[in-house]
Structures are given as C-alpha cells and as structure tokens.
Image 1 (cartoon, rainbow, N blue to C red):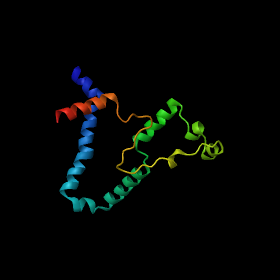
Image 2 (tube, one colour):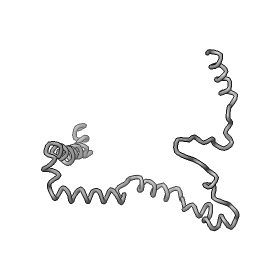
Image 3 (tube, rainbow, N blue to C red):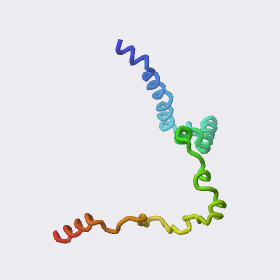
Image 4 (tube, rainbow, N blue to C red):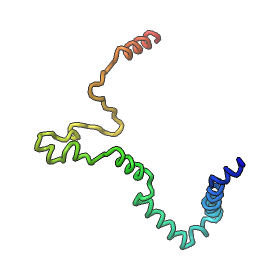
Length: 130
C-alpha cells in the first residue's frame, strides 16, 4: 500500500523521463559529437532553444516577480517618486550625479560611524598583543 502511494505520486515517471529524455542525449552527444552536431535537425533545435533563452520567456524569475508585484500591489517608480520632469520642477535633483562609485572601491554608508567603541576596543586589544 505504501509502495503504491509512491507510484501514485508520479515521481517514478518523472525520474524515468529525466533519465531517458535528458541524460541519454547527453551521452550520445559526448560519445559522437561530430555526428550529433552535424545533424541539421540538431542545429535547428539549438537555434530555437537559444532564441527562447534570449527572449527570457522561460525564466522563472519573471513569473515570480509578476506574482509578487500583483500580491504586494507594487507600481512603477514614477508613481512613488514622480517622473524626472516632475522631480526637476520640485527642485529634487537625481542623486546619481553626487555618487562617485567605481568598481573595486568600497563606499562609506551615510550616517555610519567610522569607529564604534567596540571596534576601537578590539583594535587596542590587538595592538597590545603585538
């Protein structure tokens, strides 16, 4: 009865399909690469797969983001902070002009203490040990 419950879930069928549908073709392609890649059908399927990958229709992140957007009630940034023209009229310049960040350089966060008392104590302890 317990074994029938496992068979009823469909996991066994998914496992067999994965083995036959995926791994078998990988073994054939690695064993006979020239014959596999020389097949015109393989080239067409490869181009179709690359096209689908390029447009991103199968990316799960898009689906998850859309679900979160609907459930959280998120809207475009212009609803919250206004368009660039509206911010310019209210004399709210874009902050990106002031931020000078280059790759590999760590920036200090605003209102972040240089040294806290705890880090100063740790540094004194390290200096005493040496």
